[in-house]
Length: 399
Image (cartoon, rainbow, N blue to C red; front, side, top):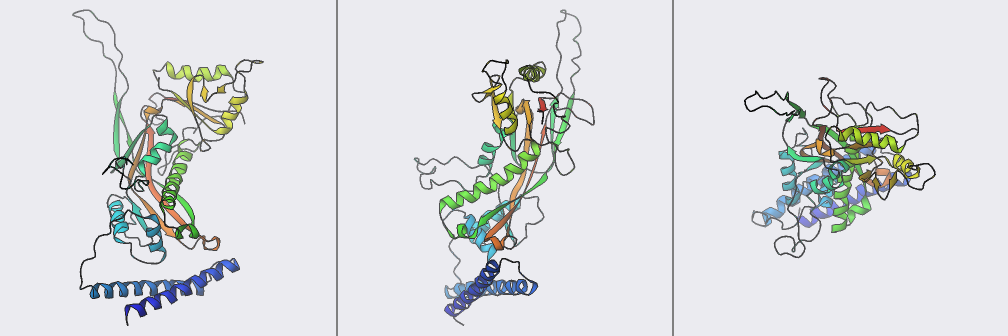
């Protein structure tokens, strides 16, 4: 059978596959068992034909090694290959292998997805030759920079550690007291003590739904949109945990608002000053506010002094300090803290699983994202050892 005949056979199978999908969508129902088996059979036939066509093309080319493609990684090409049961092209396969190499996921041999390395790339410059002039589009493999730029805790001063391997023990010193002494008097014991906390990988799972019509497009804006969607899915999940009220478990760290009891009275300027004072007296200086938007709305309508049109939250500041708002903060939550005391760790690459079935009736493809993160506050209070100091003042405004 010639290559043309094989390709024609493959085309007919793809049309049959598409017809089946269209019928399911038109009738607004799920696959029945027979249709699901038929669809899987067609998919396998297409995969077999792809292999035969590739082998025949290599034979006709005299078994000449295929020249490496000179292009960038493409999310669209990677997703389309998985959807159609094909092997990843050279560029996408090379990137996925690099991401899988350092991944702690056990699914590195999964044929239903691909891996993305979490790496910070050199800055592209659109006007400088060899530094980005040749490729001014967004660097689609730099997932670290946009994630770091969007994470509120990182913007407020938290340290973001990437590419970690295994558990990371981070030591800190509880402090030293100093005093005056005579020329020959013995030095006073400062009573400082070294302690450590451990960052360990915890799995974050999120998903992104993409329109099949979108995936037909093949331009930089679509590629950048897919990249930003993956980053946003991870960020939302991480921040909802970080600024939430849930207790910590072996699978996820505790939220900063865990164990905070909601106020029973209205918020006042004096209460905000007390939060600030409690941290300044512990020598925390680099303070920022993080609040849920419903909490910040309350502060915008609350006067500092009754009858005076000066409000607790004005001009993007609370008492002269920067404010970061987010719907990922627990409802009515308000946090003041020194975020430089927080460490956020990230391990391995991001695993992207392509699921064309769950949202088939809606004409979308679901990308399930698995990644590994952890965070802690270096000198935060430890419930087990009952020691440490708290670099955050937290409250939940009256509901």
